Image (tube, rainbow over all chains, first blue to last red; front, side, top):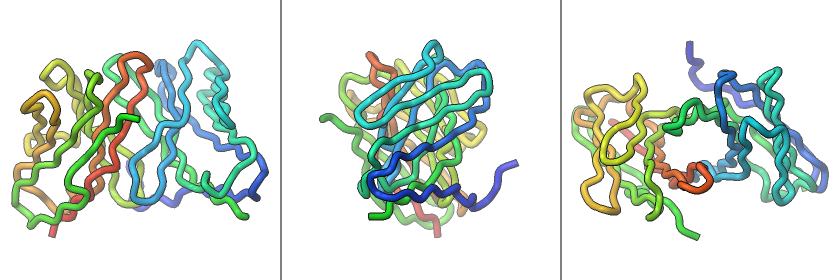
Length: 112
Length: 113
């Protein structure tokens, strides 16, 4: 069942270091995955996406890796900056209608 | 850059009252969504809407909930008789037809007293 008041996993890194945030997804039939960044009081902000026929995709300072064998997704942030501090969610799309299933989130804290 | 806008940013309502949350999706998007996030929990899907009808809904989206696209720009979520457990952030999203990415508004914080 659902947990009430989830304690988010927290990742604390030094400014300038690389960050890796991990996510396990639930449905092997999911065909599309997205990473979102959520700052306090704001909605989820799109960072990067990847389709299930790929295993790696790069953006500006971010890379997403997909391992379908173990249903694992990761987000790598290069040269992490204080402005990267936020909660990061992975989401999977389970059907063509686009319904997204979100993971529980990881709180990234960047120390200057 | 075009964005999804939601109003109001905060809505306080007495239990049992009706509430309407409003959203203006990005103009060329065709699929629209409502999600909610209870404080400290993950984002949960409520409903998807395409071609003026609901395409999918979750177990949360019971008979007390309804959605409407009353004109060419607005997309609304109505809760007919609010309960304490409806207190949450409600996010509207719309989907880019070229990339399939969903773009979210900044949400409405709904507080039921």
